Length: 67
Image (cartoon, rainbow, N blue to C red; front, side, top):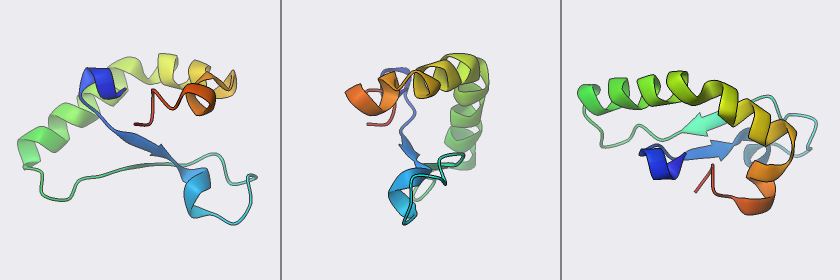
């Protein structure tokens, strides 16, 4: 989603095993409340695309959704 202005990191990077793949992390450090709200709206509007890409492995293979 970086091309849409939001950077998301898969939760698997923060767990010891890949079984914990149901989480993702967003960075809100040094952001204004307005930018956080805007980012959440972008995630909300693109959630179906994000989930489909993640389930198909496209997101992890390309890293385009996360970086």
